[in-house]
Amino acid sequence: LAKTTQPISMDSYEGQEVNITCSHNNIATNDYITWYQQFPSQGPRFIIQGYKTKVTNEVASLFIPADRKSSTLSLPRVSLSDTAVYYCLFTGGGNKLTFGTGTQLKVEL
Amino acid sequence: EPEVTQTPSHQVTQMGQEVILRCVPISNHLYFYWYRQILGQKVEFLVSFYNNEISEKSEIFDDQFSVERPDGSNFTLKIRSTKLEDSAMYFCASSEGLFEGQGNTEAFFGQGTRLTVV
Image (cartoon, rainbow over all chains, first blue to last red; front, side, top):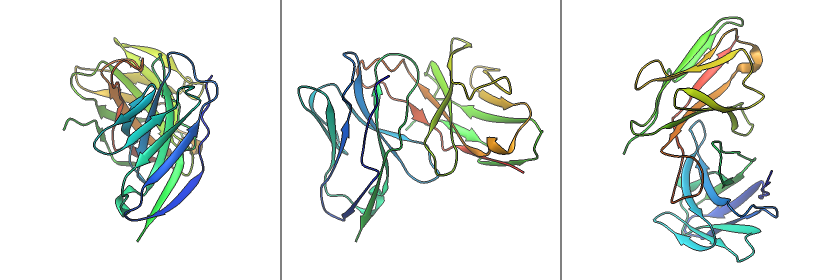
């Protein structure tokens, strides 16, 4: 089973760009990389998904190198409301999501 | 924006009692899930449900747990005889399709039911 490794926590200040990197050395060919966000006492929320290269949407960008052994979630100009836990997951067939411990991002003024 | 709704938001029950947690998934979704999160721990998969049957379950989902889709809109999780260690946040989720990475198949989670067993 493919496993992800992320930093346990990160601190940032408002207005800065935050990059959270996830390692996944044994990613399978059919796995997509997906990121979810979770605020305290709320359910996880989908942020972005990609297979390789770069994907951008209205809230984030996802960078995946050619070897796909890592991925980086980039949050431009974070605000206090981006303080949350961010999870890197695989979605590659099957019908469940496996969450790791995630990265607790804390944004301060 | 469509959303998954869960009721109640908080339930307190005595050990040994049965509880039913309710969820209304997004109307055109076909796959339904229950997850739980013990305070301070990670989100854990319990069960997935498709076409009126369980498609996958974790080892947490033992004989004390059951799921049902009693009508066209509700999806329920029943815990027959609650234990102290069942205290957790329970999240219902739904998705249009399987997580096969085609397009942006995502799971939509509800706000959760906080279950406290005393």
